[in-house]
Length: 331
Image (cartoon, rainbow, N blue to C red; front, side):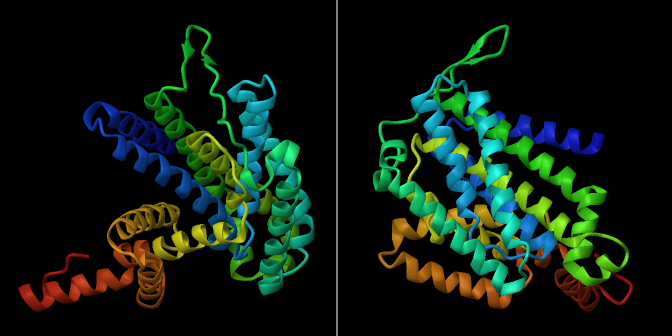
């Protein structure tokens, strides 16, 4: 735990120092978006990579978090900490209700039911015009009230402060996910992923643990959505549409399924690819699709597994022996 806390503090110091050493709006934008999208992907990977449950409807919680934060700050006198607390509660309740039904099924049936629920949430949001703005979304911006720190107030409306706020919330959320997946609870999830029937033979209620994992995944997905709504100062139906659920799946496939940092790396790669292709290619979607196909076919376990797994290690070992002799090995 101390090691995780130390690494978290180091990451926070480095990221919060970016505006001082690299005062670039593009770099801060990139860090914010990669952290939010990475958190979105890591939250889904609790289900896919660690529990073996593929969800096609994770955008429901992303949208619930975004709209909860936006509505509360727009239409009530909630402070930012209170709004974030409400995001956690609403996302958990929604995940508990949706997961109660979805975890009764397995494989493709589970995936399709999550997709169906996300479309139900999408339909509800688009029909409640007076509350959510319908198809237009929450227009007019999301207020950013000052945060009372006790000894001072923190003005989140300043972009540099918004950047630091996003970094802190995202990194702490990632730390909590890491603690969860490294705990005995996380080990049980991995056992369920490998063989749900065998876990039931030793007295573990697999469905109960799957439901808890579903709730955790939904909560952190909601936090990611709230941060994105805060960043773009709005919440829109596109956040919930089924195509948004595909984005974290691509990030997980690019970065790696069974690693914690894999989805984060996938988020960075997908962000850089999308940004550059949009700027230089007219048919950027076609090019991006082709690149993703290549990633899926060639790097079946993702970039993280390729660089740190046995394939690269074996290749380096073979290269070393062929170059320096049999006695050398760099693994």
